[in-house]
Amino acid sequence: MRRLGYTCRPAPRYRLRADGGSVEVCEGVYEPAEDSWLAYSVVEKLLLGHGFELCIDLGTGTGLLTLPCSLRGVYTLAVDLNPCAVACVARAEPRPWDAAQCDSVSCIRCPIRRRTLLVYNTPYLPVEDEGLEGLAWSGGLSEALRAARWAASCMSKGCIVLVYSSLSGDDTGLRRLLEGAGYRLELLSRRFFFEELRVLYGCRMG
Image 1 (tube, rainbow, N blue to C red):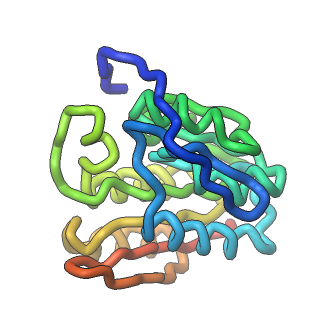
Image 2 (cartoon, rainbow, N blue to C red):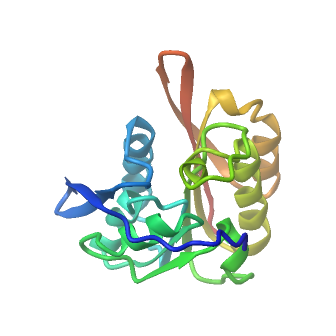
């Protein structure tokens, strides 16, 4: 875990409601946008019929993507490196079962034998900004690859949802990695101005 040297008490901005639940949008935390809602629709789709026992939301931000799981009573873990996000997600209704401030999958045990849904709305841009606001943006496609490698090695059965931008680079290696691990992939994409937002998702059920 990268030590940030500070804690955070995020100031609330407004409450965002979705499907009977809600999250607090806080200062210093990534505000849900088009990418968030694309991922939300995929998470809802995957929750139908897969019988997940665990949901993990990496880079949780406000916790919007935890809501579909929490509302269905699935044990949900929210993870973010940003301490403001970890404090903010505690205000979600319903709250995720647990929240952890850590660097992506570094605090999650391996292997996981429960049927798992792993969601990661990755940082958009391939930059390394050490500031608080930069935590929502830095990392690029390398973060998606990191989560995919972990899923391929540690999740015996379940589904993965990765959100990233065309600005992050060529995703051929990411697709090959997941397909080689037995994931049957689908892609949902939307073009916004100068970029294409992509939600790559797939399952392997053992």
